[in-house]
Length: 116
Length: 111
Image (cartoon, rainbow over the protein chains, first blue to last red):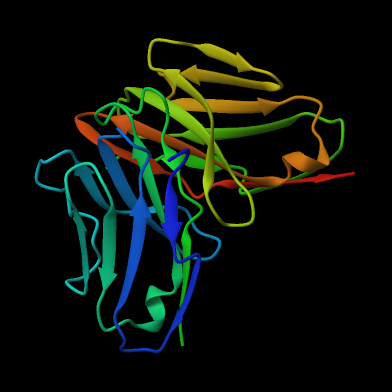
């Protein structure tokens, strides 16, 4: 695709429900990143995928968070038993070159998650 | 982990004025990037400067990098109301492939 696509754009869910967020990276981009951004805050790293290597999950805040990516295609971020503190914009980014971001990172428009 | 921190947190100027925002980081880097974010959604890549570069230009943007001070500045000349946004710096390096972002500078340009 022309850019990084994220869906849904907005999601309102009840506390305790599971949610699944989707990211379609730019075709051919080997690296994919998930970030969380709370209102008025910076970007908080969650997880990094690089090709078929084991993902770097060091940023996941709890075991309620998980993510998958098959090869260099779509990634899904799953939050189980959502809490109000999970309310944030979840951003996905992909890049062409391995980790170095020589051409910058291309971000999707994000999914705004609201837990009520 | 290294992290860019932008300064000031907020900046309010009149259209036509220049806007300068700064970024400081903690450890060695491969490169430093600046991004713009409108309305709290996706970030748009503005400019990338490598660790061996000192200055870079792109249109009305000028970025400097001082690795001895571990700092960078972003200058927007002749600002426009459309430049109103949050600006973030991101760094990677020191063995990490994960770009880390600061909290951003919120820029408001009054018409």
